[in-house]
Amino acid sequence: MKGMMSYDLMETIRNTNEWMGASARAMASYPIWGMAPHPMFKLMSAWGHVTERSFARMVIKPDWGIRSIPAEDGRDHLVHVDTLVPRPFGDLVQFRVAGRAPMARRVLLVAPMSGHYATLLRSTVASLLPDCDVFVTDWHNARDIPVSDGKFDIEDYTLYLVDFMRHLGPDLNVIAVCQPAPLTLAATAYLAEEDPDAQPRTLTLIGGPIDPDAAPTEVTDFGRRVTMGQLEHMVIQRVGFKYKGVGRLVYPGLMQLASFISMNADKHSAAFFEKIMLDAKGEGSEHDHHNRFYDEYLAVMDMTAEFYLSTVERIFKGREVADNAFVVEGKRVDIGKITRVAVKTVEGSKDDISAPGQCIAALDLCTGLPASKKASHVEPGAGHYGIFAGSSWRNNIRPLVLDFIDQNAGKAEPKAPMRAV
Image (cartoon, rainbow, N blue to C red; front, side, top):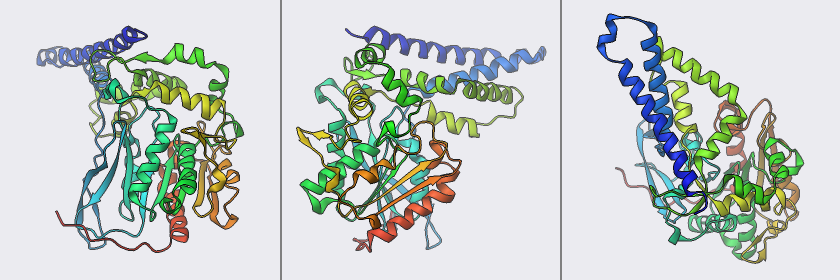
């Protein structure tokens, strides 16, 4: 079967490296080596600890880790993650703040399905929670989804978003981060034509490839250099026997991670060398910046083959959204049908994944939207991560997005108060 042996081989290599790290850490930590205080043992122990942790994180879904938030009443309120709409390939979840009245701002945060879990947006969620009721698309790891649950491509993704927006109602503000920006724009246009009363009030697109050719990057150039046949041959494998999705064709998370790291190999190598040396000197900690970042960065998930291949073929190569020719279930989605949803784009001037110009192209596609309902922002000096989770987001972009919501969403009627827990 295509790629099943190579999929299991990658998992075997990962598991072996985790075991080697654990063995080195345990071996070098025996008290007897204190009688021969050679720095080699501390270095070996540190290498083993960092290696074991790194390879173990690759198959563990991170926790959201948002326990409580302060509220205007001066108390800390517990935060519960509730599943509102369970689906095979992804759930709609709510971050319910216990004992807090419903907020006027209701935000659906559309997380990317691009190799990492939705928890990559943890700091984004935490920054919005004090001022908004927050809902998130929590996508599932394809290796854990049985083949009997069927396919999942970009049309299915778009229809998931349509269903989630319908469920949450029209008093909603949608923020799409990175990869889902074009599909979220398409889902909004789909609702504008099929179910206008279910449209959100505002749509904010952050660093997404609406028009990949507007400002080519290494990511878009790669999509141009290889054919679809070459791409399928190089990266698509079948899930191995260890997981529920055995036999499903996927773009494996471990292969995606290798690609991520190769883009900045020198930077990552230096970060791990520095971490090993700090641990060897006894100056490292479990919750330092390195571990907080890499615990999330190394936790990867498989994508269904049809989702990945259709994204490359239709969004990047075919430019269906950029040309306003995207089709869902045989029907063209006309972005020009968006006439009352305020749209804002956010880009980073140093974004090397979705370069400035790619996302703002959405505004030109919204031909039915008056200029007063369009806005854009380019954050000086910000890279891809910074525009939704870094200091640029916290200090500059978040306030702008909330102001945009307030200016265009109007007053939302409060719902029944939450029950204190």
